[in-house]
Amino acid sequence: MTGTLGPVGLSLAYLRQNRLATALNLLLLALGVAAIAGLALIDSQMQGRLTRDVAGIDLVVGAKGSPLQLILSSVYQADVPTGNVPLSTLEDLRRNPLVREAIPVALGDSYQGFRIVGTTPDYPGHYQATPAQGRMFGAAMEATVGATVARAANLHVGDSFAGSHGLTPGGEVHAHTPYTVVGILAPTGTVVDRLVLTPVESVWAVHAHHHHHDDDGDGDRDGEHDEEHHEEVAGAQPPREVTAILVRYASPLAAARLPRAINSETGAQAASPATELVRLMSLLGAGLDAFRAVGVLLVVTSALGTFVALTNALQQRRYDLAVMRSLGASRARIVLQITVEALLVSGGGTLAGLLLAHGGLALFVALSPKARDFGINPLMVAPAELGLLGLGVVVAAVAAALPAIQAYRTDVARTLAQS
Image (tube, rainbow, N blue to C red; front, side, top):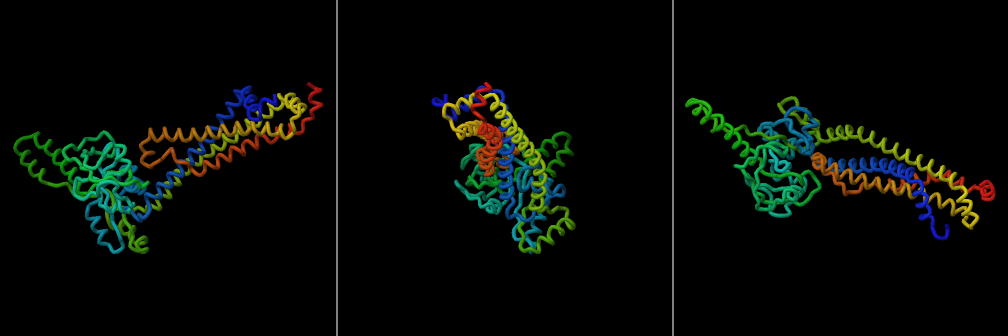
């Protein structure tokens, strides 16, 4: 038996004899590793993406409401806006000596689930985004699209498309005001990859047309008086507004004075991305810690299960091990045999857990638009995963330690005499 089967082959044969216990231990370890690895993947990618998207933005000014919602909607493009602020707010900030740069963001429409953002070339410039094809938008109804948008929507330079009302698919299509793609941005690994960028004037033009179209529908309902009233309304323009303004300070003094002045003296609110990012990570951290604890518990349970299985198997195979010793197998060979068996279980469970984590994350990304919004990539490898491979070795060592010691101390003659 020892001549035809090495440690690995013999261990596999023993594991097949105890299929149920082996499968259960593999499952427990795989689930525990998957939970820890999945959380590590989400945590590392989200923190990296959140930090990159907010880098260099000192303040966000928008309509009053939740500061966190303002940051999520205007910086991360992952929530609905709190409202709009007058264009005069942008003009006042640009004249303020405490402000180095004020970038407008105008939201309201989308294309195939990707947001159309009215802004200036300073916005992609802030993220160091440059056109890989074509050029940056300039005139109204020109659009420069992010790399992810171009790939997912199959857009090319020169194509035309119409946005739909709202930030999610299914809204009314603005067919009378199409955009023309004039450029496609190179990938940046930031929020810009998932956006359709256009001048703020484009957003105003689309909604002015929508406003007039709605007025046309209302003006036909009553008589001549309503028609005269419709002519007056149709000539009116909706107020010029922006959704939010991304601000960079001109000096450290601005951090102490500007937010307080905006919150107390204007109808807008000022939110600090750094402060809200810390709050967001603390909210996410509590849930991640809970799931991580469950993963650790499953790994510990698997280690205990493997230990119990090896101990029971040792008792059942005492005669087999004694025969191996009598046929020339050394004590070290017996210890190696038990250790290899534990390594096969822990290694198989760890690898299965890592595959399960990436597969589950891929499914989550496919089903969740929010995951795509945050740029979660199931193909990326988190540094913590290398540590999990080491964890598999530790689990094997702990599970095999006592059974290996017992096998090492086995009295061959007594065991054969008792059998």
